[in-house]
Image (cartoon, rainbow, N blue to C red; front, side, top):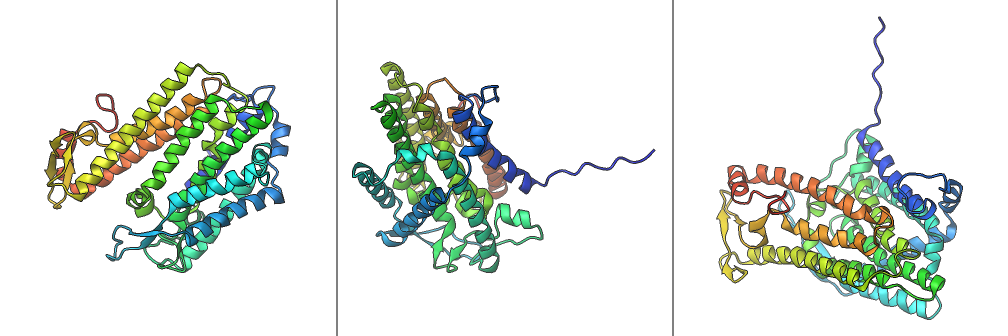
Length: 418
Protein backbone atom coordinates (compact mmCIF):
# COMPACT_ATOMS: atom_id res chain seq x y z
CA UNK A 1 0.00 0.00 0.00
CA UNK A 2 1.53 3.28 -1.05
CA UNK A 3 2.34 5.76 1.67
CA UNK A 4 0.36 8.96 1.65
CA UNK A 5 2.31 12.06 0.82
CA UNK A 6 2.18 14.37 3.86
CA UNK A 7 0.14 17.48 3.25
CA UNK A 8 2.29 20.57 3.09
CA UNK A 9 1.13 23.37 5.31
CA UNK A 10 1.78 27.02 4.75
CA UNK A 11 4.47 28.12 7.24
CA UNK A 12 3.32 30.30 10.14
CA UNK A 13 4.83 33.55 8.86
CA UNK A 14 3.29 33.30 5.39
CA UNK A 15 -0.02 32.11 6.82
CA UNK A 16 -0.24 35.05 9.22
CA UNK A 17 0.56 37.52 6.45
CA UNK A 18 -2.22 36.09 4.29
CA UNK A 19 -4.77 35.92 7.13
CA UNK A 20 -4.13 39.39 8.52
CA UNK A 21 -4.26 40.99 5.09
CA UNK A 22 -7.43 39.09 4.20
CA UNK A 23 -9.16 40.14 7.44
CA UNK A 24 -8.54 43.84 6.83
CA UNK A 25 -9.90 43.67 3.28
CA UNK A 26 -12.82 41.47 4.30
CA UNK A 27 -13.92 43.92 6.98
CA UNK A 28 -14.02 46.68 4.37
CA UNK A 29 -16.00 44.45 2.02
CA UNK A 30 -18.45 43.51 4.77
CA UNK A 31 -19.17 47.01 5.97
CA UNK A 32 -19.35 48.73 2.58
CA UNK A 33 -20.39 46.07 0.07
CA UNK A 34 -22.24 43.49 2.21
CA UNK A 35 -24.57 45.75 4.24
CA UNK A 36 -22.52 45.21 7.39
CA UNK A 37 -23.08 41.45 7.34
CA UNK A 38 -20.26 39.14 8.36
CA UNK A 39 -21.38 36.30 6.06
CA UNK A 40 -21.40 37.09 2.31
CA UNK A 41 -24.94 37.45 1.03
CA UNK A 42 -26.48 37.40 -2.43
CA UNK A 43 -26.64 41.17 -2.24
CA UNK A 44 -22.89 41.43 -1.65
CA UNK A 45 -21.24 43.49 -4.36
CA UNK A 46 -17.97 41.68 -5.08
CA UNK A 47 -17.53 43.55 -8.34
CA UNK A 48 -17.86 46.91 -6.66
CA UNK A 49 -15.44 45.81 -3.95
CA UNK A 50 -12.85 44.63 -6.50
CA UNK A 51 -13.09 47.94 -8.31
CA UNK A 52 -12.91 49.99 -5.11
CA UNK A 53 -9.65 48.47 -3.84
CA UNK A 54 -7.63 49.25 -6.97
CA UNK A 55 -4.84 51.59 -5.82
CA UNK A 56 -4.41 54.98 -7.41
CA UNK A 57 -1.48 57.34 -7.68
CA UNK A 58 -3.49 59.95 -5.80
CA UNK A 59 -4.27 57.64 -2.89
CA UNK A 60 -0.65 56.51 -2.64
CA UNK A 61 0.53 60.10 -2.83
CA UNK A 62 -1.86 61.14 -0.05
CA UNK A 63 -0.53 58.45 2.26
CA UNK A 64 3.13 59.05 1.48
CA UNK A 65 2.58 62.76 2.15
CA UNK A 66 0.92 61.91 5.47
CA UNK A 67 3.78 59.61 6.49
CA UNK A 68 6.46 62.15 5.55
CA UNK A 69 4.53 64.87 7.39
CA UNK A 70 4.58 62.77 10.56
CA UNK A 71 8.31 62.11 10.17
CA UNK A 72 8.95 65.85 9.87
CA UNK A 73 6.89 66.57 12.98
CA UNK A 74 8.82 63.94 14.93
CA UNK A 75 12.13 65.40 13.78
CA UNK A 76 11.38 69.12 13.96
CA UNK A 77 8.99 69.71 16.86
CA UNK A 78 10.54 70.36 20.29
CA UNK A 79 10.90 67.14 22.24
CA UNK A 80 11.89 65.87 25.65
CA UNK A 81 14.33 62.98 25.72
CA UNK A 82 13.53 59.73 27.49
CA UNK A 83 15.79 56.73 27.96
CA UNK A 84 14.58 53.26 27.17
CA UNK A 85 15.07 50.25 29.41
CA UNK A 86 18.57 48.72 29.51
CA UNK A 87 19.51 46.53 26.55
CA UNK A 88 21.34 43.22 26.87
CA UNK A 89 24.71 45.02 26.95
CA UNK A 90 23.50 47.49 29.60
CA UNK A 91 23.22 50.46 27.26
CA UNK A 92 20.09 52.56 26.80
CA UNK A 93 18.64 54.17 23.70
CA UNK A 94 17.31 57.71 23.76
CA UNK A 95 13.84 58.55 22.41
CA UNK A 96 12.28 61.82 21.31
CA UNK A 97 8.99 62.41 23.14
CA UNK A 98 6.81 64.88 21.25
CA UNK A 99 3.82 62.80 20.14
CA UNK A 100 1.26 65.02 21.85
CA UNK A 101 2.59 68.09 20.04
CA UNK A 102 2.59 66.12 16.78
CA UNK A 103 -1.04 65.09 17.26
CA UNK A 104 -2.23 68.59 18.12
CA UNK A 105 -0.29 70.06 15.19
CA UNK A 106 -1.71 67.43 12.84
CA UNK A 107 -5.29 68.13 13.91
CA UNK A 108 -4.81 71.89 13.61
CA UNK A 109 -3.32 71.55 10.12
CA UNK A 110 -6.02 69.12 8.94
CA UNK A 111 -8.82 71.15 10.49
CA UNK A 112 -7.54 74.40 9.04
CA UNK A 113 -7.15 72.80 5.62
CA UNK A 114 -10.71 71.47 5.75
CA UNK A 115 -12.38 74.71 6.83
CA UNK A 116 -10.35 76.72 4.33
CA UNK A 117 -11.49 74.37 1.58
CA UNK A 118 -8.02 73.04 0.83
CA UNK A 119 -8.56 69.49 2.14
CA UNK A 120 -11.75 67.71 1.02
CA UNK A 121 -11.74 65.26 3.92
CA UNK A 122 -14.77 63.34 2.69
CA UNK A 123 -12.61 62.26 -0.26
CA UNK A 124 -11.02 59.63 2.00
CA UNK A 125 -14.41 57.97 2.56
CA UNK A 126 -15.22 57.90 -1.16
CA UNK A 127 -11.77 56.40 -1.95
CA UNK A 128 -11.32 54.28 1.16
CA UNK A 129 -10.62 51.09 -0.80
CA UNK A 130 -7.88 52.72 -2.87
CA UNK A 131 -6.42 54.19 0.32
CA UNK A 132 -6.52 50.77 2.00
CA UNK A 133 -4.53 49.16 -0.81
CA UNK A 134 -2.10 52.07 -0.99
CA UNK A 135 -1.39 51.91 2.75
CA UNK A 136 -1.03 48.12 2.52
CA UNK A 137 1.47 48.34 -0.34
CA UNK A 138 3.42 50.99 1.57
CA UNK A 139 3.51 48.76 4.68
CA UNK A 140 4.73 45.74 2.70
CA UNK A 141 7.48 47.83 1.12
CA UNK A 142 8.50 49.43 4.41
CA UNK A 143 8.67 46.02 6.10
CA UNK A 144 11.04 44.83 3.37
CA UNK A 145 13.26 47.90 3.84
CA UNK A 146 13.26 47.46 7.63
CA UNK A 147 14.21 43.77 7.23
CA UNK A 148 17.11 44.68 4.94
CA UNK A 149 18.22 47.63 7.03
CA UNK A 150 18.02 45.74 10.31
CA UNK A 151 20.04 42.84 8.95
CA UNK A 152 22.82 45.13 7.76
CA UNK A 153 22.62 47.83 10.45
CA UNK A 154 21.21 46.20 13.59
CA UNK A 155 22.43 48.85 16.02
CA UNK A 156 21.52 46.54 18.90
CA UNK A 157 20.03 43.09 19.50
CA UNK A 158 19.07 41.43 16.25
CA UNK A 159 18.38 38.05 14.76
CA UNK A 160 18.76 36.99 11.14
CA UNK A 161 17.66 33.45 10.36
CA UNK A 162 17.79 31.32 7.22
CA UNK A 163 14.11 31.84 6.39
CA UNK A 164 13.28 34.95 4.36
CA UNK A 165 9.65 34.96 5.46
CA UNK A 166 10.47 34.62 9.16
CA UNK A 167 12.95 37.47 8.85
CA UNK A 168 10.34 39.50 6.97
CA UNK A 169 7.48 38.73 9.35
CA UNK A 170 9.23 39.00 12.72
CA UNK A 171 11.97 41.43 11.73
CA UNK A 172 15.74 41.28 11.94
CA UNK A 173 16.44 43.99 14.54
CA UNK A 174 14.95 45.01 17.85
CA UNK A 175 15.62 48.71 17.36
CA UNK A 176 16.20 49.54 13.68
CA UNK A 177 17.37 53.15 13.40
CA UNK A 178 18.60 55.35 10.58
CA UNK A 179 21.49 55.87 11.21
CA UNK A 180 22.03 53.06 13.73
CA UNK A 181 21.81 53.76 17.48
CA UNK A 182 21.57 57.55 17.35
CA UNK A 183 19.19 58.09 14.42
CA UNK A 184 15.49 57.92 13.58
CA UNK A 185 13.79 55.07 15.46
CA UNK A 186 11.46 53.30 13.02
CA UNK A 187 9.68 51.11 15.55
CA UNK A 188 8.88 53.77 18.14
CA UNK A 189 7.71 56.13 15.39
CA UNK A 190 5.46 53.61 13.64
CA UNK A 191 3.99 52.35 16.92
CA UNK A 192 2.20 55.67 17.37
CA UNK A 193 2.50 58.45 14.86
CA UNK A 194 1.13 57.57 11.39
CA UNK A 195 -1.42 55.02 12.62
CA UNK A 196 -2.83 56.42 15.85
CA UNK A 197 -2.97 60.03 14.71
CA UNK A 198 -4.22 58.79 11.34
CA UNK A 199 -7.01 56.89 13.12
CA UNK A 200 -8.38 60.12 14.60
CA UNK A 201 -8.05 61.92 11.27
CA UNK A 202 -9.93 59.09 9.53
CA UNK A 203 -12.73 59.43 12.10
CA UNK A 204 -12.96 63.12 11.25
CA UNK A 205 -13.02 62.26 7.55
CA UNK A 206 -16.03 60.03 8.18
CA UNK A 207 -17.74 62.85 10.06
CA UNK A 208 -17.05 65.15 7.11
CA UNK A 209 -18.57 62.56 4.76
CA UNK A 210 -21.69 62.31 6.94
CA UNK A 211 -22.02 66.10 7.00
CA UNK A 212 -21.58 66.23 3.23
CA UNK A 213 -24.28 63.60 2.80
CA UNK A 214 -26.86 64.61 5.42
CA UNK A 215 -26.00 68.17 6.42
CA UNK A 216 -25.30 67.20 10.02
CA UNK A 217 -23.04 65.08 12.20
CA UNK A 218 -24.95 62.67 14.43
CA UNK A 219 -24.53 62.47 18.18
CA UNK A 220 -23.35 58.87 17.84
CA UNK A 221 -20.61 60.02 15.45
CA UNK A 222 -19.51 62.74 17.87
CA UNK A 223 -19.53 60.17 20.68
CA UNK A 224 -17.23 57.69 18.99
CA UNK A 225 -14.90 60.49 17.86
CA UNK A 226 -14.74 61.90 21.38
CA UNK A 227 -14.04 58.54 23.04
CA UNK A 228 -11.44 57.49 20.48
CA UNK A 229 -9.71 60.87 20.42
CA UNK A 230 -9.49 60.81 24.22
CA UNK A 231 -7.95 57.34 23.99
CA UNK A 232 -5.27 58.47 21.55
CA UNK A 233 -4.60 61.69 23.48
CA UNK A 234 -4.06 59.65 26.64
CA UNK A 235 -1.58 57.50 24.73
CA UNK A 236 0.48 60.54 23.79
CA UNK A 237 0.08 62.20 27.18
CA UNK A 238 1.86 59.16 28.62
CA UNK A 239 4.05 58.52 25.58
CA UNK A 240 7.19 57.70 27.56
CA UNK A 241 5.29 54.82 29.17
CA UNK A 242 5.33 53.06 25.80
CA UNK A 243 9.04 52.43 26.33
CA UNK A 244 8.09 49.88 29.00
CA UNK A 245 5.84 47.81 26.71
CA UNK A 246 6.72 44.40 25.35
CA UNK A 247 6.52 45.67 21.75
CA UNK A 248 9.36 48.13 22.40
CA UNK A 249 11.40 46.00 24.80
CA UNK A 250 11.22 42.54 23.23
CA UNK A 251 9.57 42.40 19.78
CA UNK A 252 11.77 42.76 16.73
CA UNK A 253 10.37 45.19 14.17
CA UNK A 254 9.10 43.33 11.14
CA UNK A 255 6.00 42.96 8.98
CA UNK A 256 3.86 41.91 11.95
CA UNK A 257 4.30 45.22 13.75
CA UNK A 258 4.58 47.35 10.60
CA UNK A 259 1.30 46.05 9.21
CA UNK A 260 -0.41 46.28 12.59
CA UNK A 261 0.74 49.85 13.18
CA UNK A 262 0.20 51.29 9.70
CA UNK A 263 -2.73 49.28 8.32
CA UNK A 264 -4.65 47.34 10.97
CA UNK A 265 -4.90 50.17 13.49
CA UNK A 266 -6.09 53.12 11.40
CA UNK A 267 -7.95 51.26 8.65
CA UNK A 268 -10.01 48.99 10.92
CA UNK A 269 -10.28 51.01 14.14
CA UNK A 270 -12.15 53.73 12.21
CA UNK A 271 -14.87 51.29 11.09
CA UNK A 272 -17.24 52.41 13.85
CA UNK A 273 -17.18 55.92 12.39
CA UNK A 274 -17.45 54.45 8.88
CA UNK A 275 -20.60 52.54 9.86
CA UNK A 276 -22.13 55.55 11.60
CA UNK A 277 -22.18 57.64 8.44
CA UNK A 278 -25.39 55.92 7.32
CA UNK A 279 -26.52 54.07 10.47
CA UNK A 280 -27.53 54.67 14.09
CA UNK A 281 -27.98 58.35 13.35
CA UNK A 282 -30.67 59.02 15.96
CA UNK A 283 -29.79 57.09 19.13
CA UNK A 284 -31.45 57.59 22.49
CA UNK A 285 -29.64 60.24 24.57
CA UNK A 286 -29.96 57.90 27.56
CA UNK A 287 -28.21 55.14 25.62
CA UNK A 288 -25.39 57.48 24.56
CA UNK A 289 -25.01 58.69 28.16
CA UNK A 290 -24.68 55.05 29.23
CA UNK A 291 -21.98 54.41 26.62
CA UNK A 292 -20.05 57.48 27.77
CA UNK A 293 -20.36 56.40 31.42
CA UNK A 294 -19.12 52.90 30.52
CA UNK A 295 -16.15 54.38 28.66
CA UNK A 296 -15.40 56.70 31.60
CA UNK A 297 -15.39 53.70 33.93
CA UNK A 298 -12.93 51.96 31.62
CA UNK A 299 -10.69 55.03 31.55
CA UNK A 300 -10.82 55.23 35.36
CA UNK A 301 -9.67 51.62 35.76
CA UNK A 302 -7.10 51.76 32.96
CA UNK A 303 -5.47 55.05 33.93
CA UNK A 304 -5.86 54.46 37.67
CA UNK A 305 -4.10 51.09 37.51
CA UNK A 306 -1.24 52.45 35.41
CA UNK A 307 -0.79 55.48 37.67
CA UNK A 308 -0.77 53.30 40.78
CA UNK A 309 1.96 51.14 39.31
CA UNK A 310 3.98 54.17 38.19
CA UNK A 311 3.81 55.79 41.64
CA UNK A 312 4.79 52.51 43.30
CA UNK A 313 7.80 52.06 41.02
CA UNK A 314 8.87 55.63 41.67
CA UNK A 315 8.81 55.38 45.50
CA UNK A 316 7.49 52.12 46.93
CA UNK A 317 8.34 53.01 50.54
CA UNK A 318 6.22 56.16 50.61
CA UNK A 319 3.50 55.20 48.13
CA UNK A 320 -0.12 55.38 49.24
CA UNK A 321 -2.96 53.80 47.29
CA UNK A 322 -6.61 54.49 48.03
CA UNK A 323 -5.57 56.31 51.21
CA UNK A 324 -3.47 53.48 52.65
CA UNK A 325 0.24 52.59 52.49
CA UNK A 326 0.89 50.36 49.53
CA UNK A 327 1.15 46.65 50.27
CA UNK A 328 3.76 44.68 48.39
CA UNK A 329 5.74 41.48 48.28
CA UNK A 330 9.54 41.40 48.26
CA UNK A 331 11.22 39.03 45.81
CA UNK A 332 14.58 37.30 45.64
CA UNK A 333 15.45 39.56 42.70
CA UNK A 334 15.33 42.54 45.02
CA UNK A 335 12.27 44.05 43.36
CA UNK A 336 8.78 44.38 44.80
CA UNK A 337 5.41 43.22 43.51
CA UNK A 338 2.45 45.50 44.22
CA UNK A 339 -0.50 44.00 46.13
CA UNK A 340 -2.62 47.14 46.65
CA UNK A 341 -5.30 48.92 44.68
CA UNK A 342 -6.24 47.50 41.31
CA UNK A 343 -3.12 45.30 41.36
CA UNK A 344 -4.42 43.54 44.46
CA UNK A 345 -7.70 42.77 42.70
CA UNK A 346 -6.22 41.21 39.53
CA UNK A 347 -2.76 40.84 38.05
CA UNK A 348 -3.70 42.86 34.97
CA UNK A 349 -6.84 44.79 35.82
CA UNK A 350 -5.50 47.59 33.60
CA UNK A 351 -6.32 45.26 30.70
CA UNK A 352 -9.94 45.17 31.85
CA UNK A 353 -10.14 48.98 31.72
CA UNK A 354 -8.48 49.04 28.31
CA UNK A 355 -10.97 46.50 26.97
CA UNK A 356 -13.96 48.38 28.39
CA UNK A 357 -12.83 51.43 26.42
CA UNK A 358 -12.54 49.29 23.30
CA UNK A 359 -16.04 47.87 23.84
CA UNK A 360 -17.42 51.40 24.18
CA UNK A 361 -16.25 52.06 20.62
CA UNK A 362 -18.51 49.29 19.35
CA UNK A 363 -21.39 50.27 21.62
CA UNK A 364 -21.25 53.78 20.17
CA UNK A 365 -22.21 52.27 16.80
CA UNK A 366 -25.27 50.40 18.04
CA UNK A 367 -26.11 46.81 17.15
CA UNK A 368 -26.90 46.90 13.45
CA UNK A 369 -23.69 45.10 12.47
CA UNK A 370 -21.01 42.94 14.06
CA UNK A 371 -18.25 44.71 12.11
CA UNK A 372 -17.94 47.70 14.48
CA UNK A 373 -17.25 45.13 17.21
CA UNK A 374 -14.22 43.70 15.43
CA UNK A 375 -11.81 45.78 17.49
CA UNK A 376 -13.15 44.88 20.96
CA UNK A 377 -13.39 41.19 19.97
CA UNK A 378 -9.89 41.14 18.51
CA UNK A 379 -8.55 43.19 21.42
CA UNK A 380 -10.01 40.79 23.98
CA UNK A 381 -8.17 37.89 22.32
CA UNK A 382 -4.99 39.96 22.15
CA UNK A 383 -5.15 40.93 25.83
CA UNK A 384 -5.78 37.35 26.95
CA UNK A 385 -2.84 36.15 24.86
CA UNK A 386 -0.64 38.98 26.12
CA UNK A 387 -1.53 38.29 29.75
CA UNK A 388 -0.61 34.64 29.38
CA UNK A 389 2.68 35.63 27.74
CA UNK A 390 3.36 38.10 30.56
CA UNK A 391 2.59 35.40 33.11
CA UNK A 392 5.07 32.97 31.54
CA UNK A 393 7.70 35.69 31.34
CA UNK A 394 7.20 36.68 35.00
CA UNK A 395 7.24 33.05 36.13
CA UNK A 396 10.63 32.67 34.48
CA UNK A 397 11.85 35.99 35.87
CA UNK A 398 10.68 35.63 39.49
CA UNK A 399 10.60 31.85 39.93
CA UNK A 400 8.94 30.68 43.15
CA UNK A 401 8.15 34.28 44.11
CA UNK A 402 5.76 34.53 41.18
CA UNK A 403 3.85 31.48 42.37
CA UNK A 404 3.50 33.09 45.79
CA UNK A 405 2.28 36.26 44.12
CA UNK A 406 -0.29 34.34 42.07
CA UNK A 407 -1.61 32.76 45.27
CA UNK A 408 -2.16 36.22 46.78
CA UNK A 409 -3.61 37.67 43.56
CA UNK A 410 -5.34 34.68 41.88
CA UNK A 411 -7.35 36.58 39.25
CA UNK A 412 -5.71 37.40 35.94
CA UNK A 413 -7.79 40.28 34.46
CA UNK A 414 -11.38 40.31 35.82
CA UNK A 415 -11.71 39.89 39.61
CA UNK A 416 -13.95 36.97 40.48
CA UNK A 417 -14.34 35.85 36.86
CA UNK A 418 -10.99 35.41 35.06
